[in-house]
Each structure stands twice: as C-alpha cells, then as structure tokens.
Image: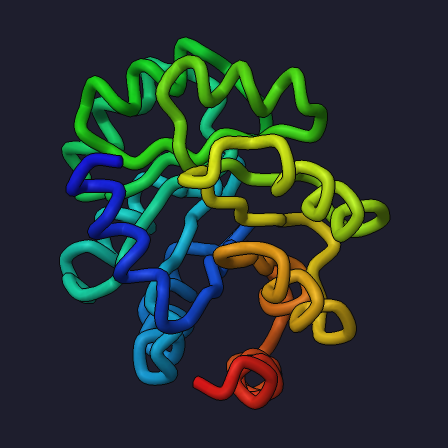
Length: 208
C-alpha cells in the first residue's frame, strides 16, 4: 500500500466516517462543511451528480484545507484530472470501472471503487485498488463483509456504503475499516440545526 493511501487511511482512522454530501448546493457548502470540521467528521465526499460539484469542491479546498476532500459518483475517467487540480484527494465510484481506477492511481489519488460481487471486488484489486466500497450495503452487507473478509487479501480495506444508518452503524464498523453515510446524515432540504443534531447522534455512537 503506497504512502498516499496510507495518509488517506490515517486521516480516516479517527472518525471512521466518509460523509457523503449528495445534492448539496453551493450556497450550503460553507456552513455544512464547517459544521463537519468542527465535529471532527473531516472526510467529505461531494458527489458529481450534485448541482455544482466542481464549484463546491473548489470552495471547500480553499476554505477548509484540513478537510480530506473526495469526489463521489465518478464514472468518467475524463473528470479525474480536473478533480485532482481542484484539490481532491480520493475518487469514489458506484461501480468497478478499470479505466477510472487506473486513471485515479495514475494521478496519485486514492481509488475507492464500488463493488457488490466477489468478481467485481477482485477485478478492482487486480487493477490496483486497495480500498473497496461495498455498495449497496444495507440489506445483506453485514453477511457479505463477513464472507469477503475471509477471502480477500488482508490488506484490503472495506468501506460499506448505502443503507448505513444509526441502527446499524456500529455493526458495520465492527466488520469494516470505515463506512460511508449519505442520506441518513445529509439531504438537500435539511436544515443546519437538524444536520447538527444528526452529527451529534453519530458522534455519540462512534465516541468521537
């Protein structure tokens, strides 16, 4: 595992949470990300299917240089160089795309491809990924993590995403390196106060 990946994992090791801000608006970014940073939830993923993701990422990297910023829902390799230039540290995909993995690694970024089947997971490993996003995780994810942990190389880290909530968070963290949390933490119409309340609920579970 290279130093860039180690740095990413070391940064994520404290909170164990990748906060997924899907459909966040540019005018929301400063207040919402500021609240995350205050609460030590400092690994943040902006999905590319948000209204203005590149502007959001640019704002965050300038205003919050300590945030471990990543881009999610990356399905085209052509976006990766632009994302790197904006300061992104990691690239998350919903699927296993060898072109996206290779381009990400060639740009010295951390690749976190999505997989569900063993075939997809081992394909991602073959192309150089060492962190895998189990997606979607909600229904059968705990059983899959147990099974996959027995057969994948020991250095592979799993980040289950999709269907993670307050009820199952601790269970998933017991079987993986970290988790991705999206709609159970942030939604596009949420108030800052409600967002703060949800952050505190998550922190109480992970003892941050």
